[in-house]
Length: 47
Figure 1 (cartoon, rainbow, N blue to C red):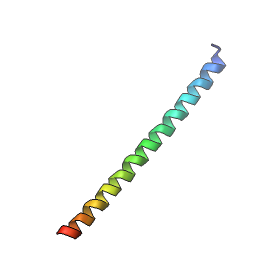
Figure 2: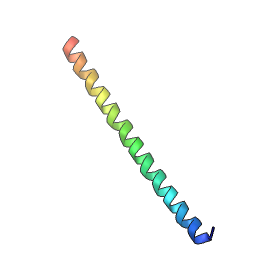
Figure 3: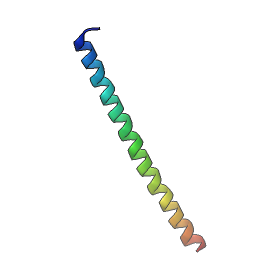
């Protein structure tokens, strides 16, 4: 494999990793907020 193809592959892998990490982080934040919201509603409902 030529150096140019290797660099392109590395860039592609880095961008895929960055996109995956971003999606996972925002998913974790979203679910944390959702769980907190449900807990607050249950606390209001049942005291």
